[in-house]
Image (tube, rainbow, N blue to C red):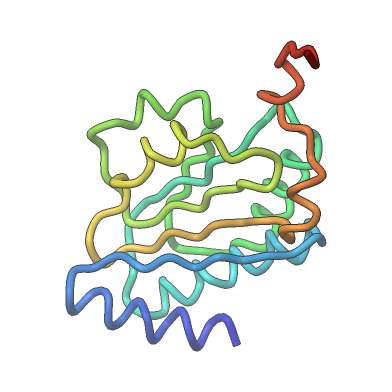
Length: 151
């Protein structure tokens, strides 16, 4: 099902030179990674080619696990560069055909902002997200580093 929708949307995006964004939501790491790979296979089937990014937070064991699940599932003719979010400043000014953003563990506005224009027209963004109720319960690296006091 993901494939059909993504393929149709990418075909429209290519004609209009627009980008498309697919948000995948699951608490199952394997299913999330497999769905991201499926979305890229649909992108490729719609005539998408070239190279893109897979962005992740390597300091989280589950992010590394999802990346490995994605590698196993992604049998693609596309070139995928696996990069940690700390590399986003190095990506400014570069463009790619697609970007997979693993946002399960953390969503830093600066990281997402830097990647906002990294996909060229006709390309695809794939966001990997946890269910909102799960996301709300996470203590992100940023939150864990905060010092606070009730007054």
